Amino acid sequence: MAPQEAPMPQSITIETIDAVRDHAVAVIAEGASRLRGLRYADLRLEVSEGQAAAAENGTEKFSSRDYGLSLGMRVIAGGRATAAGYFGRQLGVADLASFDTVLRDALGHAHRRALASASRKQHARRLGLLGEAITDTVLAPIPVRQAVVPARYEIDPRSVPLEKVLALALEASKAIQGLGAAVQFNVVTALTALDRQLFVSSEGAVIDQSSAVSEGFAYVVAAGDQGACELYDSLGHQRGWELLERGCREPYIVQPDLLTWGLNLARDTVELANAPELPGTDHEVTVVLDPHFTALVAHEVIGHPSELDRALKMETAYAGRCWFLRDLDESVVGRRVGSPALTAYSDPSLEGYGHYAFDDEGTPARRVVHIDRGIYREFLNSRQTAAVLGVEPNGSYKAADATLVPLIRMSNTVIAAGDRDPRSILREVDHGYYLVGHRIPSVAESRENFRISAMKVYEVRNGELGRLYRNGGITADSKDFFLSIDAAGTDFRIFPIPNCGKGQPMQTKRLGNGGPTIRGRARLAGA
View 1 (tube, one colour):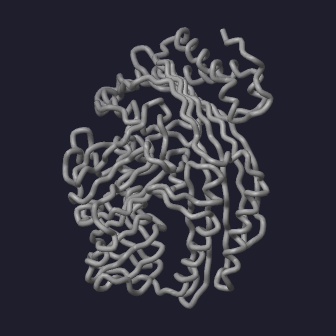
View 2 (cartoon, one colour):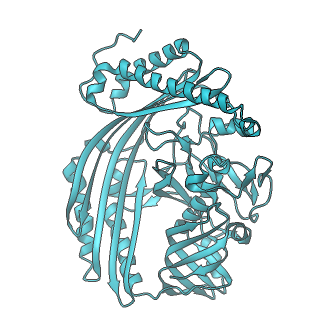
View 3 (cartoon, helix red, strand yellow):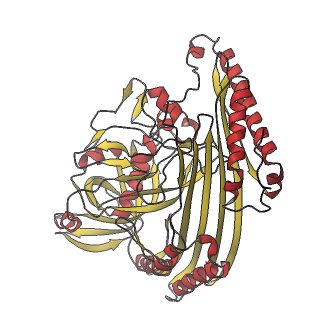
């Protein structure tokens, strides 16, 4: 029986979770006891309230205030074979009046899908050698928790008038346009929101997590002596409106306010429009990467190939494979893949876009060390993939929205700080190149090699910065580059990656990536 509670609210807000929590717990418990062959079930309910605005060339582009309520259900069921079934949908105010029915229908859909998949799985097992490869869906055990995780902010995103959000975007866009005729085009956006998710499982987990997000974006096109140049970037953090108004100075997250940040990006664009294009090389040169560039190396060349669903070929058709794991009998775990100066890890406990306390199946988040002083150690996993390898789940199963099936995702994936003064890392370079800010990645299907372009590239001679170049970056075989790293600085930083895409259908997710200044060897990739 559904609990007898006060009437459901007549609008969707963050507080809607308080009204539906007991209903969600009761429906999952009831389903676990009565549905045929049900081994496990979990429910995710997610509510968001946010607002955003954009300005183009100093004029209003759009402004909006919106909310969302989404539901995701997973069931593992079957008899002689077990399989998972998923169901997700967006909800509206009208659904609150019959919320128990909505939940039971979702549970029923997921249950029927799980039974159908289990039946087909059992039938396929009769196909000889191929059928022997089909296994049951099993989840590795985790500690079952009940927890409440509050959001962190000084200014509640919901309390800010929409006119104020638009005014900030307009102010930044007008200031960029005011830099002069060299600025040909600009767009500035500002976003601030609050999100809350309830996770309930048939094992007894009840986890209520909230997070704030504030984000800015700028795109600038400038013209100069060397032609046109464009730059774009994002700033953001799991904080309230204060981030965009005042910026942030935390130990490893240093961001100015939106206006200052946008002007800095625009000035760089104008400067680069007057700089020559970087010539490529057919040989390796010494390269020094600033923390912003290092962030994309950590993301593309360490983080993505460390996702175990990718490594196990569960998403090969969509995003490629991984050279860290050839098959279950051949991997780089325990082997050297980099120099002793290279350590890399994913850590959801760090502040930043990748921060969370529990993933989307209730697993407590923890640091996952991928590379320890050059030796590969651990993949990001889910409960299902952890069971495949016989390892402990590490809390890396996340979805971009509750309606979507979670995927194995990075959190704050970074290259660890070293013990070197970043200025001395540059001063020791007789001849090389200093790459500042990341732009565009191009990475091989199995991530064995990469090409990543920089915002700015400076030639370095006798430890001093020289000529500035644009439209260039580096290219290298991943392992060769990792082995070449001989220095890592103390200037560790984490940057927002607001649009990491993965899966089919595509899920775009906010992550944190970062690292310090590092030095290695690679070929220059020109325009």
